[in-house]
Length: 265
Image (tube, rainbow, N blue to C red):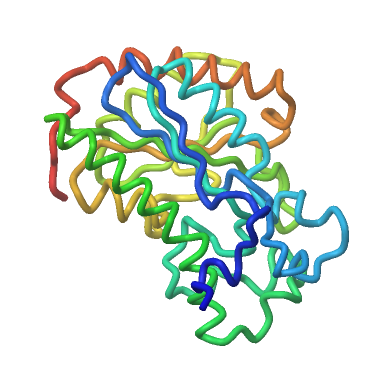
């Protein structure tokens, strides 16, 4: 009898997780929750018209490219999701209805309508759980080596949402833990050409996304979520430019030994 995962993911479907190992850097794990717009073949493109899944509703455009380059520059490991946020959102609690949205930015997602509890559980087992298990395992490896790790979460946002323009080039999302966010905001704001959002265009106080909240905040680990405007990172050159900018801003912060301790909220 086939397993639930096998019944959703075919042998030629992408893996649900991409893990990159880098060495030589600080004890930091980089995550990218919306790295891919892939859809399991069994879900028939979620019933969407051609090309829609490749738009911002399907993934964080440019985020994976930045994440891979930033991990390499900092010498830190990275874990990236393997499937579209419309299959199941790896940054939402899976018990929340929004984790498998029936509409996104006004676009209906036919393949997500009226799903049974069993169908939702199948997507979680195949695509959500392996990603978060990989994050937990990599953080545990740091802990087993005697390190208190930090977590960096890379995202991107569309320049226009619900008809409203978003002027920020980059947003820093944080809540109660200032160890990385405050100096990062200061470093980015030092460039007068940048429009830097402090909990913009989303707030980590609404509450924080699942990945940061579940793996870092709950454990008292230093963390930050970084949002990049998609038109700035949609090309290889743009992704490389922003990876270099973030690496320059983050390197001195992540070199501070005093940030690597558990601080319970």
